[in-house]
Length: 220
Image (cartoon, rainbow, N blue to C red; front, side, top):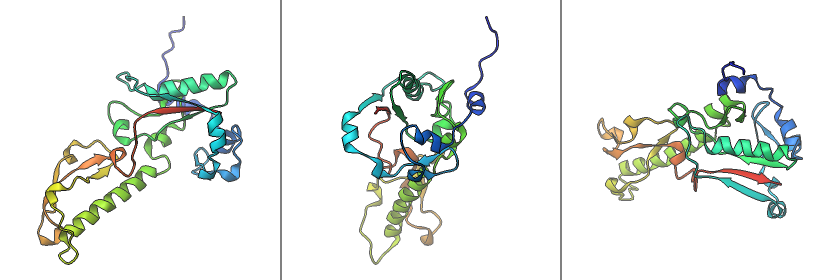
């Protein structure tokens, strides 16, 4: 029996051969011109590829409500493994995963790209920025937060919002306990109206609007 230690998730990911994203897309009949490239290994797809007739003929499997291990293996690892198994059986299957938040990535849970030989790569890119969507969500959310405070400050076009009733919080993609409940607007009249505020983690933003955390497998 081999006593060779099991490689870490990162070691497995870094030793794997990565296909160009156009070659991955070709496996499901998506042309290179339909891809919006983010380097060699990542791309976005246009909405015009959605075909309701094809969707009606497909089967959707939801993997949800799994209790993860202390290391975090749960919905993602099971979804990727199940998807690989379906493809091994000759099915044309695609796994759909949501983008990881940096909060869990830098916490005890770790990343959200699967684990062991049941993961998606490049792990570092997926876990540490991906295509920049979270950054765009932060900007949109925090712009709305700034507009609220600017209106409190504006005496001519003030909407008479009671600062004590404001529920819209700022967001950042990080678990930072010290920022969950804060006081803003200190430093004099030029710096706004003092009030209680706080930060949520970016995926909790209403701009993001996740109905629930799940992993999906589409069989086409």
